[in-house]
Length: 372
Image 1 (cartoon, rainbow, N blue to C red):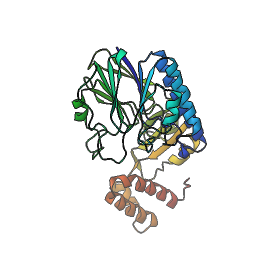
Image 2 (image 1 turned 60 degrees about the horizontal axis):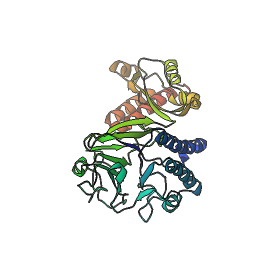
Image 3 (image 1 turned 180 degrees about the vertical axis):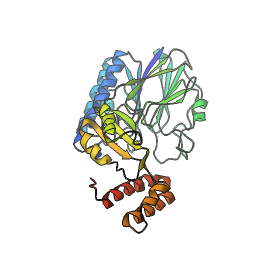
Image 4 (image 1 turned 90 degrees about the horizontal axis):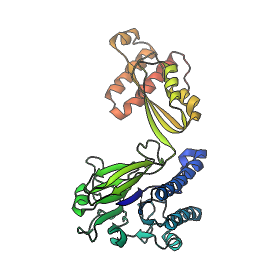
């Protein structure tokens, strides 16, 4: 039985400038996930820890960040757990190795690091060969190009960083195609780059992205995990995502057609959590006379979340009867007809902005207060 721990895309040292005063707390949260990952590896008696790139957010990590990583790698080394890593597109240095590589290798001599050349390391006691390579950004070729297709041991594992092909989403030169993975005949391919845990292929040639173990972006579903991989026999990899992240992402849909403003507040309050990044989408058909003031609700409740964002995607219900009630020779009537025409002609991504502008404009013309 081979037992692996696969992690990637920690992005240690990320500045999180968009979080303002909360940025420092999120940087510490990233560091804490590395400590928890090492705890998990020791607890589970892992044979090999695989770090699939972007351990750092920069090829020039700060000395304090490198110090943190060396301390945790030493803990693994003291527990006789092997460690292998590749660089990612964020932390690859000019030599093709991860930034800070010399210091990491000096502190942990048994650490295996892969540069831009394909290398294979054999662990005789595990009857396992590990093949790896760091990406070369801008090369235009898949990082799997040129990998050996015959195994030199009972078990064969791969480690690299790069984007996988998804029709209509990720295409072009340099992407990893599923058929490439199948052709290699590996028992498991550990990938980095995609920030949510994601299976690319199942056994017998299993391939996964571990995703980032902590939230890196506002709308990141599937983050917060590392992967426990057990391989009892060739071609039989079993993958179990293990949550170690602190922050969570939640998307909440609210139908304005079936609830009033107080109902919206109650629904959002029910999701409140200081470690949750919450995206609330308000949708539904509403009368032209009704104003959905999402800004005021967001300002009122934002401190109850790590981050709260409310998006107004309601559509104004404007039928012939309502139109007839608005005299054409009035400013309000002219404005509504003009906006209604523009919304009908606008491309889909632009319509929510125009819908909200219509609501606010009607409120202002009717003499009501609108908070911006």
